Image (cartoon, rainbow, N blue to C red; front, top):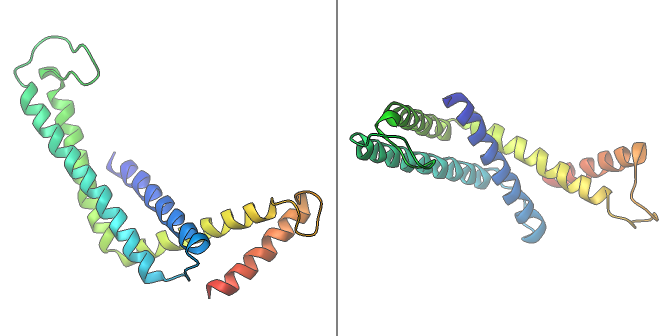
Length: 163
């Protein structure tokens, strides 16, 4: 469960960093700065770890409050004594997730990989959007091989700017 939650968290961080890259490049006209994005990725990982820690603490409190409540739950968030074991497990998984996310924050390889993947996805999004814009010397959007060639050409041009 922790591994699955970690994968989802890394995907969320990758998406957030990609979005920031797009905004900074297109709106703010800022050059690529790997250190800045490394800090952004680490901040995002810490934010997710903080959210998981807060949720684990909340679940521990809910578990304590429901220990003496008997009967059948009437709603999804109406926990009873029978839910104690499940609440304990969910809190434990979240606490382990916090540890894993904070460990990954310190792992330069993981952060670098996140940035590289986010950058590639941002470039892909820019090239796909650009290739679909009508005009630019043609009546309609490029399709098929013409689109692939246009995307590759744009990728090469953008990579020249990135270096």
